[in-house]
Length: 373
Image (cartoon, rainbow, N blue to C red):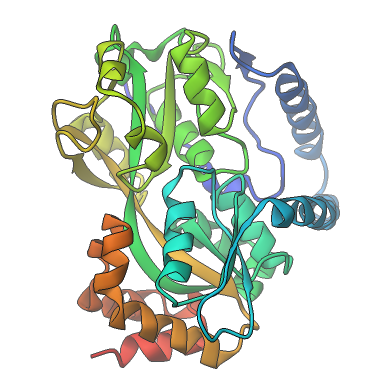
């Protein structure tokens, strides 16, 4: 299968709709999702014929609607969150994470467990929703994919103004889990693939990967289920594969028994696909998920990775941001015991990051990272 030129997708998701054509709904897909997708695409086609001023007005209206929707969802999610208060803490912060069993959720809980930050770790749809919740002051902290955040910030003034980076923390691996009869991504034509909710970073990355492979809506069926539900669909042969972007080891996949590997496997990302993506200046790196990272995974698998970061409201007190960074580094050894991804945090790397991404950092974070010893 030939690789095709990539359309940069991630900057298009913040408005709540996409400019992508309507996607087929697979056997495991939700009918309501298909209907929603159709309505969104119809709206997008109409919007593309309007004058720029009208498009800007529509964008502002959509952002207002997003704010209202996010507030309602934030209230619901807050009730579902896991509140963990650190010793001697006088305030508990709302932290948007990701799906239950995902690495975002575990990282947030580890901050509280090690008496670093008192948080109500609420599950969410993922990076895109997390960015919106910070933008709209429905969360104090969150975790998000760096590629999505930077693309959004470059194109949306409200996000650039209201959402700031505290600290880059680790790389997230692209997990592509498929039935055993698949040997490469090139074979996904006519397959049913779950790429996560449209509010997730997995969704954005999944569309980018499939687009790079030339798999448009006429060649693949897409499902937008939460990873927990998508896994059940995969086990029950309702879908052929699922794409999840999360730091390995992902708790959801770590719970699977060795027998899972009798029917399913992690698919590798080829060198050619990697070159196609980096040729478009997308911030992916090649990495390896080591053998036995999961009990059902006997061999090492080459895949892609992208950075993640703790993000915060721009108006968060400087003292809170500075203390968070100081405590993370001073207690990194303890954090590693709660999740191995904390091993990837390196002072030299974050100092370099602070120089490159100065304008995306919270001012207190920039000062702390530049002066860290």
